[in-house]
Image (cartoon, rainbow, N blue to C red; front, side, top):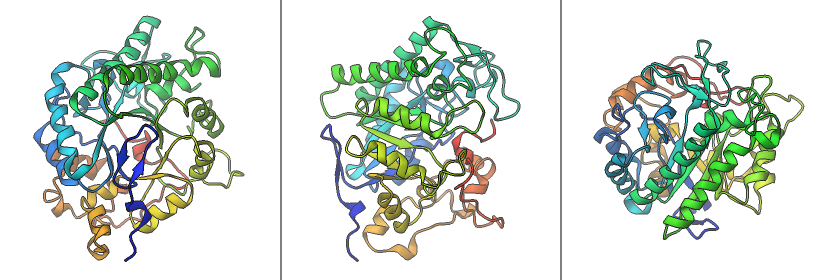
Amino acid sequence: MTKSIFLEPFQFSNGLVIKNHIVMSPMTTMTSFYNGMITTDELNYYAARAGGPGLMLTGVANVSDNGKGFEGELSVAHDEMLPGLTKLAKVIHKDGTKAVLQIFHAGRKSNSSILRGELAVSASAIAASHPANSETPRALNSSEIRQIISDFGDATKRAIKAGFDGIELHGANTYLLQQFYSENSNQRTDEWGGSREKWLKFPLAVIKVVNDVVKNYSNKPFLVGYRISPEEIETPGIRLEDSLFFVDQIKDKVDYIHLSMGSYKRTSLNDPNNKKTILSQFAHHTKKFLPLIGIGSVETPADVNSVLADGANLVAIGREFIREPQWVQKVANNDLDSIRTKLSPSDMDELAIPPVMQTYLRSSFYSVMNFTDDSGLQKDYQNSLAPMEGLKKKL
């Protein structure tokens, strides 16, 4: 078999080289301790998948205590997390894979149960439309906003100390960074809202503080990535042109853009007359400026090649890495027939999937995991949001 181009090394503009064009998507394990410290089960899960991808993104870690979005979530909010995070970075570094810590604040996508009696916070006191029983958050004041911005900087410093090769700002799936940029969730009239320029202020401030920390504390190439959801389905809400504008504002401030979509074939969810793939439209804006990570229901080498042909520079694989931890190695060895594209419930222990994550996959994610006992038709999410894009139920 001719060696696939996606198995060749890739170099970022800051000098960091990864051994291939494959990225493992950030996927929650629901397995951290109650306070956000990493568990042995999580370390074993990442160890089983390390070594193949050029880059591995961790499941999201909160930067503030009130930024926790779900139980079992990783945290980077305190120095006590450093020993566990250091172990995580070391595990991922197997056979030269690079490690990136995804960081976020959940904002209104949390609730008072998860926050132990505290109200969730957001740009404005407006409840999310999904799920239907979402609680109304408390609007942050300016001092609290600046503290959260500082928290993102502190989290980045911890990632550097722990030995990671970068951080990814999770500005997708309707979390706090997206909430400030969206008119649906940000209806402030002060310096943090009221116009497109002011909706941009919070994410731009977070990017700046993160870049300042990297400049001051990292002595090696360190990535700052940004994940973005192209559209919201609510009205008012973010439309594709808003996201493309957003990318234009940050393309000289980050090292890559990472899309969040259930299908790499997706076209606009809001404009039926726009027939171009979202991926190709983003690629038009990032071409010659910074790498674009394409994603969405990628399972086979042919899928990877299609994503690259549509303009992406790197390809993120998510659910398929849960089913097949050795995907890259098997492709490299032309052992394609042995690649799992379905997941047997009886194989999950063998695949080092933590028990709590197994329950999560069998409930909230059952319809998207290709379980062998799922007799239903698999959705491709080309024309609808997937559970992992912010529509999953709260646990």
